[in-house]
Image (cartoon, rainbow, N blue to C red; front, side, top):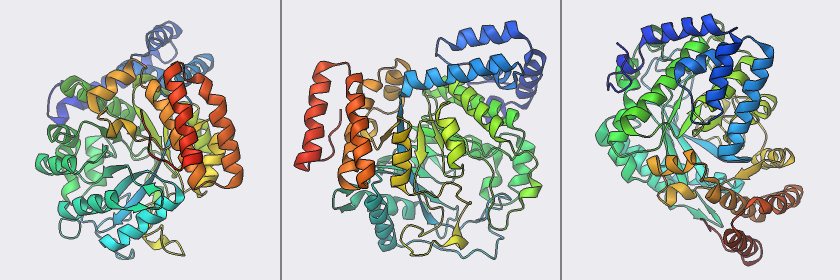
Length: 472
């Protein structure tokens, strides 16, 4: 029985409710009156429930689909402006005891070398990332209680935060590791992590079982209920995601939104981020066995409908996607992207990228500087801001500001200042020149005269005086 407030996975991700919602969407996908009513509701920018959002996703009226995309773009602009936050993944270890059929790290894969970074190797990786200009990392690790215990993760986080190299510093460490206990989430919280990220992979329980035949991850309920335990452990910024292509995309979309609704209903805080990865090639993974892959048009519409349904959430697209694909969805709701990424263990410091340890193939292989220049050319503001996390604006405090569309009062000046840090310390000459023109053109959007004055002073101190790490 569907119960959004239940703490049981099978109640808040209820199969019958999803099927009924899919049937309702099919009944109304060509009903202009119903779609108009949903769009009118969506224009209030307070979000949509999973059933209404499914109607928009299923809509087959071309002019209404154009309206959906225009509305998604407007909502993204209202909440996040033209800022795009940059981050990079850091793979600590590919030891894993799970049997996930879509991941090359699965325990039965005997062709992939198993690698675990030492703390000294982590230092070298972090320095390499700092030398690119990164301030925000997402650490990744396979699930293996012997090789990758929570103590190893905690030590690694401490190492990452401790490294100050030239003007470089990692100011926010997000964590993408396996579902764990409330006690371990408390330890991660106390270690000062930013967002705890865990992809559901698929919300379809029977498909989940087939895709995760062995290992602790095979427990559907334990995995699905992880975000509740994380919040019970004090982590109030959590990130959801599914791996599109494992099951039918509309089912996954409904499950994703129901999970967001559940977090909002129980904890008063929905997902800080939603990621939208698609299945892509990897070692010892047979892509032909995944028959639910989605094309670029469907992917773009998914992004637009998630943005409309969950307007406050940060939306992430990684280097799994090509430059062309990323460019398209930036316009429809994406607010965070990775850049200069390596998906291999030790991939930032080896002269030749260790392709035999990658988790997935990277489509967008450009350097961070190339990505920054590309964003600037499209009039996006590349942002390395981590101020909210470090000023305590997390969980319900962040959400209240975001939902009121007040977060931009902090975000825009912070984005401009962190961009100037990048331009001063790491950018190529062409990127620096383009970036400073962009900063100058966006200063007029800071409407508070006092904030504008302070921002200009700080930009000068960064550029001329060598000072760093200002924030509102």
